[in-house]
Length: 229
Length: 261
Image (cartoon, rainbow over the protein chains, first blue to last red):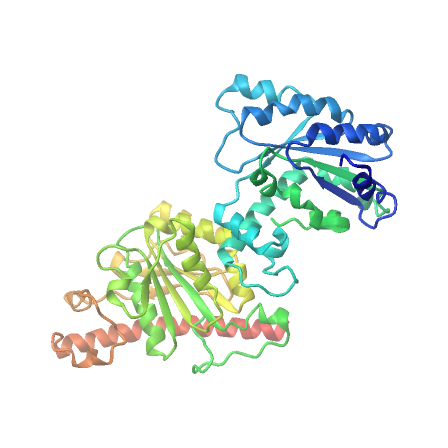
């Protein structure tokens, strides 16, 4: 994101690629430089003018260091939709037991919306990682070549249930209206961009569904409409 | 509940297409014997059901989630496997086996302590839907008792497993059934099943594990007097008749559905 050729790879396709949603998964540590790069190329300005729908999913880990990034990120995102994603990679409560600490972070940004990603069973999570396929493929018992696989029925059930809850959260915050409002009105959707800001560790990123949202691609709106349960 | 398997006496109609296949052409069954109450005859019913499959010449595997003394695994060590669902490994060992398309009928003896967690998990992972999709008929035989907790638990099963055949079982040993309206049947062709009371004094002959009602040597067992043996056989015939009637009713209901379709 900091080099011009890489920026071109991402942003020069916005106007002509078939995909209506572009998801960028940013590695931890590149937050400031990425936002600065977006600002430099006029991307954030375009979002302000309404030419692009820009959303930031700030994946939070259960640590003070992670929560402290909220204020820093909020300064950059401007008018973008800003989602604070509580990613439950363990049984953390994100300091809800300490209202003062909790409010100082989560009530600080008034326009930010919270999304809670429930914890996925560790073994199910590891099996999806091993399979190297999107969650939807795992649930459908398909391998990377879209052939029938032999994943555990129980683990697939856990993932399906979890994914249903995740999509329930997306529905709750009306994400589909944000990324594809036109599809509900039966009109072609315009270009959207979703930006994922990762947590502080790889596990935080890989366990969050936004990091894998790219599988939804141009069928995102339809997939959302078919969210299980 | 579905007792039919390929090669058995009763033949199911061949499916006309995939959609129909998911609706009535079952290859085998998974029957869960349940009740939230202890000592109401769950293990006895699971034993009878397992032995009924054996008696009919059908392959059967049983799973014991009851544990403790006098468990299904003690009575039928060759057919029954001890299972548990406290951790994900146990859940996988049990449920992954239950949905395998191996044409083996399965019987689960569900302990009262595991009832809630078992059905919650079954709902969560979509057990009944997956079983039906694979041509396996999911069924629950629920030992009915007059208490509210039991009837509430039964009604909850309609939510947990709406795709399963729910059969209330009235164990005559528990007294006359005055609570039938609390236990509505669910699923095509399902009926209430009566578990006749065993004559006093005969229980001791069947309560010492290992013991199989399907054992060919039962007739010549030295410890069972002839009159007791005859009474046991009469009792068994009554129970098997109940099982067969349930089986036939479901078969007829499925046939009717296939004709209407």
